[in-house]
Length: 83
Image (cartoon, rainbow, N blue to C red; front, side, top):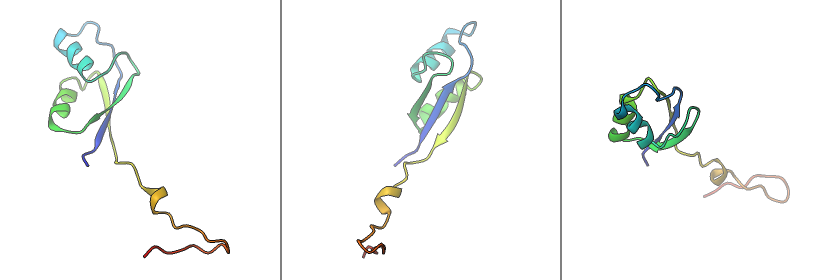
């Protein structure tokens, strides 16, 4: 499964060209401090690169499956091993 990018708008789009304002809106950002998670693909990376001076970006890992892989405890307190 491809990763995701967490994009946060850090600066205002006021006084920037319409193309930059449109790119920020297309990323789903509405105001300073607003954060969205978008799919990590070449198209969205290109959009982020075009407005990199207005946003901050971090990569989000796939959700861990910690709870699904944890061994179950038995009544006597010993953990069962999955086969």
